[in-house]
Structures are given as C-alpha cells and as structure tokens.
Image 1 (cartoon, rainbow, N blue to C red):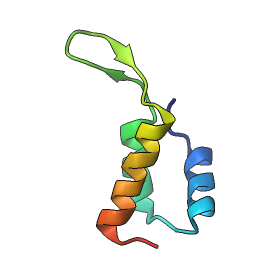
Image 2 (cartoon, rainbow, N blue to C red):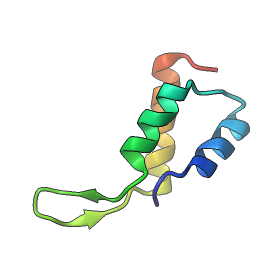
Image 3 (tube, one colour):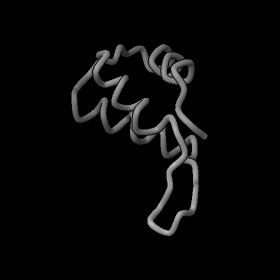
Image 4 (spheres, helix red, strand yellow):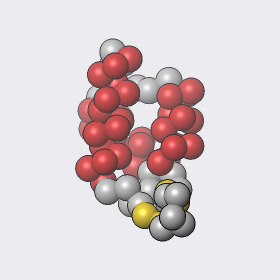
Length: 64
C-alpha cells in the first residue's frame, strides 16, 4: 500500500485530528511511493506500517 492524500484525509477524520500541512507533506513524501532497498528490491508498506507511522507522528507531536 502507498499513502494517498485521500487515505490521510480519512485517517484524520476517523481519528478526529488535524495534521499541520508540513506534517502531511512529510508523510506523503515518505510513504506515497514504493521503497527500493540497497539490493534493488521494491516493496510497499503495509496499511499497518503506515497507520503506525502516522500514529507515532501524532503521538510525538501531541497533535490533535
């Protein structure tokens, strides 16, 4: 799965939070494309990976 603006919007609505624009941009930059490791293997994050990363950002920033 890759992070989309739509998914991020729905996440914020379901969690009743509002992320600052710069946080949204950073999350989208990091998780909106597949990842290539050092060996050239391509993989995508799971929905749980993305959810947990967003949750960590929210928790660390005390956004809400």
